[in-house]
Each structure stands twice: as C-alpha cells, then as structure tokens.
Image (cartoon, rainbow, N blue to C red):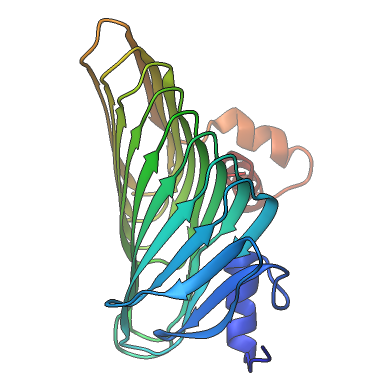
Amino acid sequence: MVICVDEIQKELLRQVADLDALPVGAYNIRADGKSIARNSTANIEIVSQKDRPGIEIHVKAGTKNESMHIPVLMQESGLKDMVYNDFYVGEDCDITIVAGCGIHNCGAGTSQHDGIHTFYIAKNAKVRYVEKHYGEGDGRGKQVMNPTTVIHLQEGASMLMETSQIAGIDDTIRDTSADLAEGASLVVKEKILTTGVQKAETHFMVDLNGNGSSADVVSRSVARDQSYQHLVARVNGNAECTGHTECDSIIIDDGRVLAQPELEANCVDASLVHEAAIGKIAGEQLIKLMTLGLTEQEAEEQIINGFLR
C-alpha cells in the first residue's frame, strides 16, 4: 500500500518507531484517529475491531524472528483518540512488537491518545514489546497520553516490556497489570523524563500466580523544573515465585518524585524484594565531566542521558 506521509508524520515515525519508511513485515499505522496503512503477513494477521476502535493482532503458533509495528501519530489539535488493541500470540512464538505514539500539537486544544493494549500470550511464547511516547509543538494545547497495558502470560511464557517517555508529554497516567502462570516471566524497563510543569503517574500491578513465575519491574526517571512524578509498583506473590521492583529517580531544580513500592506475599515460598532511590546529581560527577571541557549544562545532560539509556 502506498500512503502519503507528510514531513511532520515522518518525524513522529522516526521518534516513536525508528522508521524512515514503511517497515518490513506486519504493520498498522494510525494517524489522527484512523488507520492509514496496514499489512499482514503469512504468520501475523491484523484486523479491525468489530465494535470499537482499534485492532486485533493474531500471531500463529511457532512464529519466530518476526516483528510488527503499530505506531500512532497525531497532529490534529483538540483530537481525543481512544483505541483498543488486542494481541493473541500463539504457543512457542518469539516476536517483537514496536508500538508508540507521537503527538504534534500546534493548536490551542488538548490532543489526547488513550490506548488499551491487552496481551494474551500462550505457552512458552516470547514477546519483546517496545513502546515510545513523544510530544512536540509550539501551540498552547497540551499533549496527553494514557496508556493501559494488560498482560496475561500462560505457562512458560515471557515478556520483555521496554517503555520510554522522554519528551513533550504534559500529562500521563500509565497503568500496567499482569498475571503470570507457572514458569512465566515478566521484565519491565521504564524510562521517564518530565520537565516544566508536566505530571506523570505510573501504576504497576503484577500477580505472580504460578510456581516458578518471576517479575522484575525497573523504573528510571528524571524530574526537572517543577514537574511531578508518582510511581506505584505492586507485586503480589501468590505462589512459589520471585519478584523484584526498583525505582531510581533523579530530581533537578524543583522536581518532585513520590515512589511507592509495594509487596504482598501470600505464599510462604514467595521471595519478593524492592528498592527505591531518589536524589540529585552528585557534584563530583559534574566536576569530573567539567574537567574534560564540558559546561555544567552539558555535563548534566550527559549524566541524564547515561542514566536513562
């Protein structure tokens, strides 16, 4: 399918999906509330939801070394977009899913994208899920994103979830919940940067229901200027399992961070650990980089980039 993508959309695609052209393989590109390009493959079928906005993705059992891209692009000021995307991943798969949303708002209205992604991952399947959020624009309107992710992992299934929100999102509420069966594993790596008066809330709720299940939830964030972040990471150990949550945050200027790691052991053989650290950039780190010729601002940026890498 040949589509017309303008320069703004091309830049958003680069930011959220690392794409300079249409990807190889399965994809669905959504722009300003509608699908503008879609492609299925022999093993990955993408179809529209029957009674609500969004798509269903069906991955055949045994599919390996394939990827799909499902970016969302918005440049209509004042648009509020809601989608429901359901992923059905068959047994013994090994796939990568690249999602993400980019908003370019040059108007006075609030542009908002809310996405509810539900994953049904069958036995022994492996999924890597990458989601980037990005906002830009010189208008007075806000860029708002509220992603919800629901994960169901069957026996022996695993998921690596890499999420990042690095620029331009004024307000966000990020909800992730997961339930894990026997031998299933979940790894979450989250990166967030807020500036100005931006606000970011993140909620994780993980139920380790099967023996041998495990979860590792790690969030790294930087709050600058007068921005505010609130993280809640809860792991419920309901069987013989291992769970770990970690929150590392840097505050700069008048930034504020509230971290709430929560653990509940409902089985004597549940092993759960949490870590949380919030602080400023160490002075000796700045001095060391400044002795190499960097300005204080350049040194600060280097430290932040390395921290969020």
